[in-house]
Image 1 (cartoon, rainbow, N blue to C red):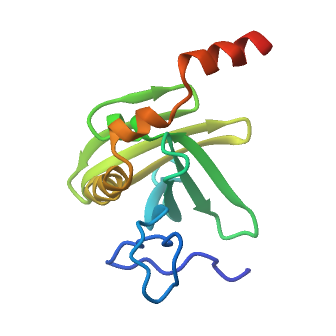
Image 2 (cartoon, rainbow, N blue to C red):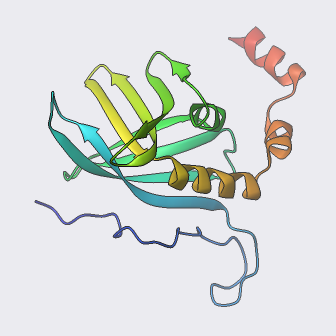
Length: 166
């Protein structure tokens, strides 16, 4: 089996890469927020496995979050969906179609977030610590607030032009 490209999970979240300046003394705001979490994955009726997953938020793409599932093979599975979907899924059932999220409570694992993913290649039901995801998400909002995110989007005129050309 190839070596695992993801760093071992730690108690301290990864703070991302600073932008600009020198690496040693840069005080610039981070360009991204990422953390590697271990998710439990349902493998059948009673079988459960684990998959290490990188949660990544890039300030240049404030509407989205990227989850990279390391499957223990050379390839990785990336899923991109809206930050709002993740935020809402921490509170109640959120999403439709390919991605659904909802909070739950498990006597063994405490407060959890469930992710149901569907693709032409199959489906997966995953579970992760809700407090860990919530803490990571709060760091993304500290980097780019909800108000700043809304200001990053295209204007109505830009959207109209795009749709008219399509």
